[in-house]
Amino acid sequence: MIEYILAAIFAGLLLHGIHRKVIARVQGRPGPPIWQEILHTLKFLAKETWIPKTASQGVYVGVVAISIGLWVAAFALLMAGESLLLLFALYVLHKIVEHGIGLASGSPYTKFGAIRSVVSAASELPLLSSVALIYLITGSLMLRDIEAYQVINGPLLLPALPAAIALYMVILSKIHYGPFSIVEAKELVSGYWTEHFGVWRGVMNAAFGLKTFVLLYAFVMIFIGPVGVPVALLLVFLLMISLSFVCAATPMLAPYDSVTVQTVTTALVACYIIYLGVFA
Amino acid sequence: MMKRFSIQLFAIISGVILVIASAGAHLGIIAPSLSAVIAILIVPVLLISVGLLFAARLTDGDIPFMGY
Image 1 (cartoon, rainbow over the protein chains, first blue to last red):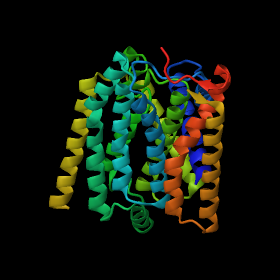
Image 2: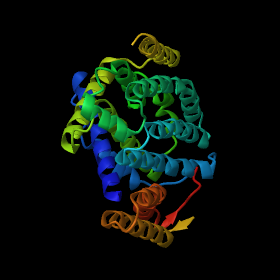
Image 3: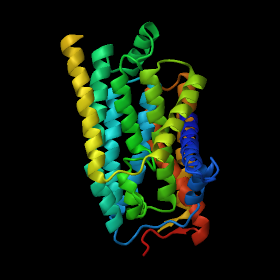
């Protein structure tokens, strides 16, 4: 298990590096090398580490451990082909991590990040409609059942396109430098994790790398089906590139605009679900 | 304050537990679900202790837990 976890963290951090590189190239900048995020993580692990006096010591450290534990659990669920509902429950728990990180240090910048995290809870709305539509089509929320359904009926990407768009938006809302990344906007320095430095930042970087990998891999599993690890990794890579293009070409939305876009998306998918339920 | 020795102990023990859990699951001695639960609980301990170990050389073995 540990070998897969470390490989997934490595792949996730590499995806973050590719993300930054693509954004830079689209914007006409050379950008950092693609292994920059891996170097960042290692660099933070070797930096001097302490806890600010204004921080709540237990929460400040505990939330870092929870962040990595949470995404290791999500990765384990993915590998076992367990329930999509559990996977997304862990995704929603990630909100607690964002709140905890933001509120633990006592800094006003991180508190604003935590408050924005509450506002951006709207990003979970497309997730809800996405899960509902997948259940309506496949009749199950177990990842292995969804994959088995796709072996017989073909990829879900087209029949469940609105759900795919909704999940794509959910992933977009969790990607760095995206239009919905209001929790770590530059006016808040680094947002909710501004005051976590040294080892804490290094471990969180690893956790967020794992998060990116898990979310992208889950997207491939849910909408493309069982294609084998090499093809799945290629698809994850292409998905990351497409997200990077969106991030590069889209300015960061104001917090309430971000909520509006996500709520409207949910409403559109909900309309499609009602249409399927009533007419199809 | 945490001393370098205790962090080394945490890092080694957690690393060994993870390797045993992983090998056990591969060999069929441990159920994969148990291996996953062990990983979920121990990976944070391993990563944080290894990180603190890297950082410990800057402060001559001590980890000052409350700073500015």
